[in-house]
Length: 91
Figure 1 (cartoon, rainbow, N blue to C red):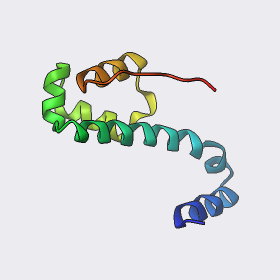
Figure 2: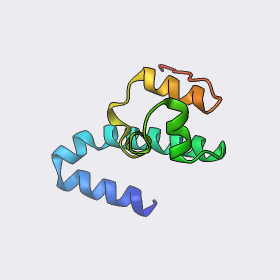
Figure 3: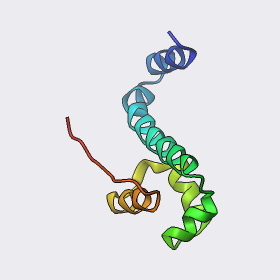
């Protein structure tokens, strides 16, 4: 078991609220990481992407670091600016 999984397991057992909400925060974190990776793969800086989207660099940073309340329309614009297509799957 990885150190992260051990930490999460221990924290969930010690903190009921954390145990009930950590997965939601983790999912948002993964979205932000994925968006950052896509941006880096295309060779764009946050500033260059912001320019393409008609926004400012701090907005891109917030999206990549705090994607918990990101709108679907924002994800679509982000993907399109990176030359990608947004695909949503419900399982």
